[in-house]
Length: 113
Image (tube, rainbow, N blue to C red):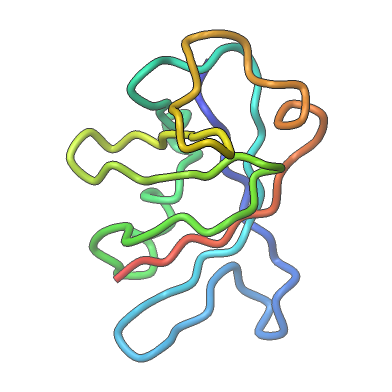
């Protein structure tokens, strides 16, 4: 199953992003269900950060910033997939998401320009 990005409307401006010069910080949570696919996972159609970026005029994701409960995310701009690495720097294997990620939505900030 694909990742689901839920934007948060709790920012002081009442929106789901912060504009910083020519960049944007998109704030929300990621929900993990199903299994991770080796080589990265995709976002559910219509529920990804790129859908929000189109609305605010951003062109591409530069980085995904989050602790991810002991896992490190990495955005692959070529494949449009989000990869996850363990604390040892090894990509997750194709299997069910670790319990730490699937327990509840994970806060995330996405840097876009």
